[in-house]
Image 1 (cartoon, rainbow, N blue to C red):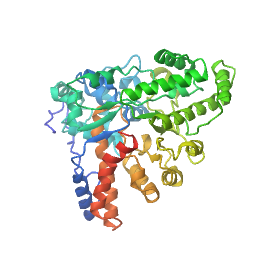
Image 2: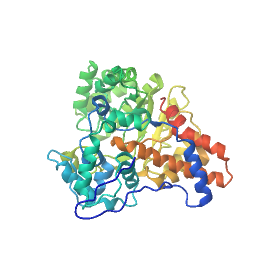
Image 3: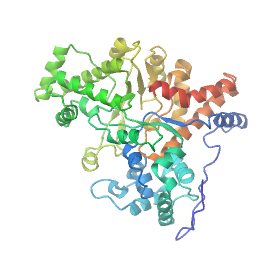
Image 4: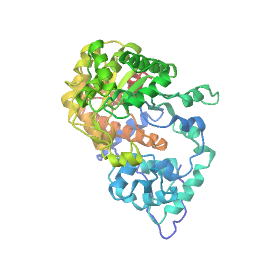
Length: 478
């Protein structure tokens, strides 16, 4: 859908033409197989079981205003790299006194070359070319022309959020939501007779489980207000969390999501848990006790998942908000969540000993420590029917890391113990681009196996279809 772009003020720019064989094998024979495999799933809609798109975007269906607000400011993949090269975050539209969108866009265009070789460059090129119709690469000279051109295009009816949802052929889109959220946007969409899509909430209770946080007491007060249940006691807090999970399930949720530091959970007797809760809640305990309570509350989430069937997604192994002054000024999710070494074999054992073979319990485990792929995660998923391997995530949702994931886990766990692909995005227009990247990587991987006579092309085509349709639906109970 690319259209011509006006000659930029002050110079010309290189054409923006994503190659049709990008990310496919370089060898002619394998590339031909990969093309056929990719073509075989061209009819599949997009299944997005985990992401961070605001449901208000679709409920209100207001036009996007400008390219900076659409492509730059909400995408921490973009802002973090520009920040690393000296562009201040307020100059990228963040904070209490953000730069105007045109200035943000100028900074992005002037630094376009910095994205060469990154996964973000793949997605940005596809967004600009395939979604927005841009035919030239951004640069300092054409920034204003592109800003005006894209802004005008965003005002067209076909570029509104609901129209794009249909154009992207999204079958289901899962959002990430606070347990105290009233889900009014989800309810508005469900009640709208003109809306034909499916948007489901996801229960993200980190604020209420992290007893080490200074924000934890205030979070419990908000939970009490939302649930109508007193959270001054351990039992009351558990009942409040259960009530909110029931509310989310009634509004379409199929999963919970957890961003705990690690995957460890504890299962104390209730009287011991209640004493620990009182100590931490009243400020009579130290960091070690607060950490133990956090692990206990995570264990309660696993127990609830075995009872209510909400899939327990674990996004662990990240030190959140690494630069505290940036968090204070600009808030969380601003590009400085940094991976730490992960461990799953011992950490998951308490949960899996209790619920690993439970018919209703299901967990999808993500990591940003790829050293655990073959050593821990593939063997765990290769035994426990409740364990699915989440797609490479955050720093690993890049082409070569995605290839390493397949190489590391498939020989042990097979393709069908993996959960498909999650786009994990706040940038709405990046959804099709990210899924296209994943499809190409999987087609290339399978083409190599076909060329090596490890499996036949018909089997490869079935596997590729499963990876991008059946597996995410199954793993996340969609």
